Amino acid sequence: MSMLLERNPDGVTPAYQTLLPLLTRPVGLWVTTENVLIAGNIPPLCRMLQAYIHRRVSVVIEQNQLDPLIGIYHRLILSTRYDNYGLELISALFETLPMYDQRIRALSPSPSNNVPLCMSSEQIKPFLPEFLTAVFNRLQANKTDNLCTSFITAISIFAGKHPPGELVAIADSQAQCVSLSHI
Image 1 (tube, rainbow, N blue to C red):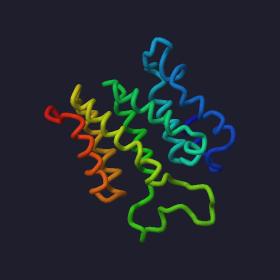
Image 2: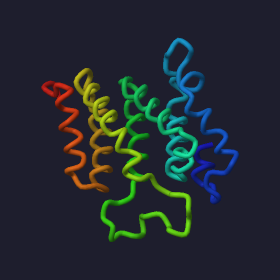
Image 3: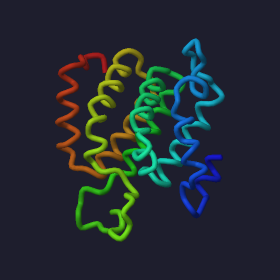
């Protein structure tokens, strides 16, 4: 289904829009009632959510699915087996951010279209401290090569679109809350 959404020339149709809230409910598709991740569902569900984000992130925002998406990220980052999928979701959100450089017009949304094709920086800023705290805590508790690689990829995507001072300021404020001596 994610491939169909990725290849659909009409973008996110109403049928796909009705499916989105079901995909972001934690119990059922992602975890069992005993709060155990359902292993076989994680990769395809993450790819489906990434397809929504890449095709039209405004649908995710309009349907108030950003908070559940961040919740899914938090659940996945705690798992050593699926942490990279959580960081792939965050990377997809970072990819939809507009470029900081105002001279680049090709990547900004079309002014004739009222529906934004990308997220604004203001929409993602409240989640950056949560994102960094979760990753820093996980790096402290159980650092893996996979986690480090995925984290560097996500940070690189963000840094490629924004001035480095913005992320450094947030990281410094979070680093004071989390002891980084083991990282």
